[in-house]
Each structure stands twice: as C-alpha cells, then as structure tokens.
Image (cartoon, rainbow, N blue to C red; front, side):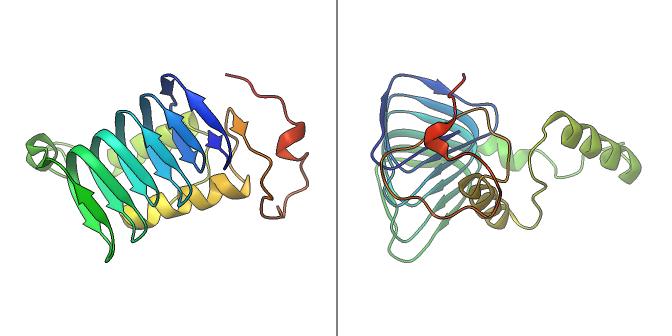
Length: 182
C-alpha cells in the first residue's frame, strides 16, 4: 500500500505486506514492513516486523525484527525493537526497549535442513507475489520501498496526492486513474 504526499488517512490500517507512507496517517498501522518517507507522518501505534523511518512517528512503535531510523527520521514515544539501527542525525525520544524474544529465537531452528529451509522459502515466495528482495535487513527494507515507489510490485492499493510523482519506467495507467480496492 502506498500513501502519497498530501494524503491524510484517519483510522486503523492493516496491510499484509508493505506500506509506504509519504502522507499522513492518524491511527494505528499494522503491516509486515512499514516505511515512512521524509514527508510521511504517523500519529498512532505501529506494529510491524520491520520499520524504516525517514519521517515522523509518534506514539508506540513495535518493530519485532528491525527498526531503522534514517537521518531525517524522528520517533517519539514507546519504542520496542528486535534490532535497531540509527543513522547520524536520527532523533529517538521516549522509552526504548529491546524485545528479548527476538534474540532468544535461534536463526536456524534445530532439525531443519538447508533443503527444508529452501523449500519453505519457495512456498513463502509463491504465496506472496512481491518482487524478490535480497541482502541484509536494511537493504531488504530499502529495496522493498524502492520497488513499491516505482510501481514494480503488485500492491492491493495506491493512494496518491496531487504531488508530482517520479516517472515510472513501466507502461501503466497513472496512479490517479487506478481504482483503489481494499
């Protein structure tokens, strides 16, 4: 899901995969990956596996695996994370706490073979038809955001404001001409 600059949404939003926010959300956001762009603002609770913050977030943030706050990012409130990465210039104020359960889980479960792990990954890839993302956690989040902003991934909804968007390399109808479906 993409929330464009100039758009304001109020209420609770639940997205199964990735949400990119360049506009404003006033309410709770639940997703696998939450990305708040430099112009993005979320006033409410965020619950995600990974979060990449370049804009402003206030209230409660729970990033079960990785919280990445970019140099332009500002996070205020209660913050829970598995791992945290702060760029120089990032501002984080409030209660910070690491979730012990993320670190307690071993990276490779006992009894799983490499072939079993590869088969599980193939099943997950088949169930989620999104662009394949590789690399470290921060790189994965950045790649997912780049894919969402460029329109290469098939997302269930795009909401854009009247702000000039970057030119797309794919032949598609403009975002303003698409239907939004939830």
